[in-house]
Structures are given as C-alpha cells and as structure tokens.
Amino acid sequence: MVTDSHVAHYIAMFIIFVVAISFSIGWAKADGIKPITDKFELGYIEDYPVEQTGVVIPVAEEYDELKDLKRRVEIAKLKQQLNDLNNPPAPKQPPKKSAKQQKPSKPPIFDDCVSALVALGTPARKAKAEAQIIFDRNPNIKTVQDFITEYGKR
Image (cartoon, rainbow, N blue to C red; front, top):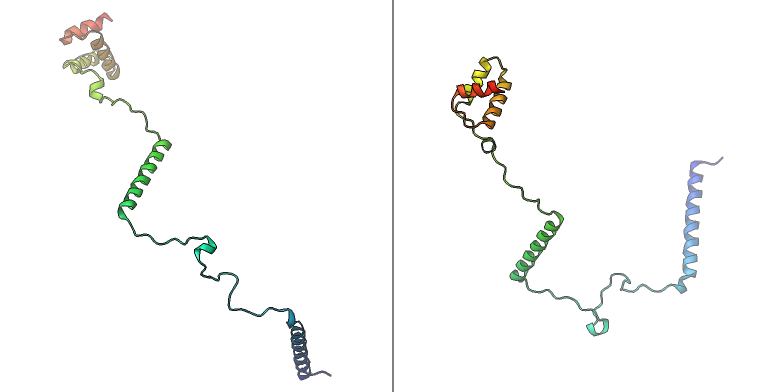
C-alpha cells in the first residue's frame, strides 16, 4: 500500500528528472545562441552625425508673442468665415408696426356710437364691427346722430 510520503517522494523525483533533462538539452544546444549585448534592438538611441542619417533634429525656437497673436487672429478670422459660409444670415425683414400704427385711430365718438347700437338691440361684438365699417366708409361723421342715420341707410 502506498502512503502519502511515497506519493510526495515520487512527485519530487519527477520534478528533479524534468529539470535535469531540460538543463542537459539547453547545454547541448548552447553553441547556436548569440551572446547578449548591452544594446537593445528596439528603442536604442545612437548619436550619428546628420550627414550620415539625413535627419535634422528640430531645435527649440524662442517664443514670439507677436507671431502667436497674429496666428490666433488669422485662425479666428478663418473660423468666422467658415461659420458665415455654413450659416448664412437670415434675410432682413422690415420692422413690424405696432398695433396702434396698424389700425387707424378711432374717432372720439366711436364708443358712443357702439353704445347707441347696443341700446338699439345689436349685440356688442356686432355693434363694434358695424361701427368700424361705417366709420371706414364715411370718416367725416361728426355726431352720433349722423352715425345712426348712416346705420339706418344700410
């Protein structure tokens, strides 16, 4: 019968065997491996003269505030032009007249004439409309009696 200590012994022997085989295979194939150098192929920087490489390394320029402001103004102008092209201005509309300017002013006896029509039995809305029509057709009415005479002619 196999005990726990025997199982642990077999596992340890297997691990030692695998390590020994891996070491011997690595030792046998060591002839074809290149030695490690101190330079890495990726990311290593070497200083070559410009004549050999043809690459010019940019040198930091001094900050010129005037050039920077001119550049910003030019950019702002171009953005404004682009905005104007994308959103054309709406056509200008003539200014609207206020309600007082649109309607002709009512004569001072207008309200009295409407009251007279209401007293004769005409509804209030219809009396206002009738009075407005009569005053539009005959603006030279000066008294309520002239108004009622005109209303009676209709």
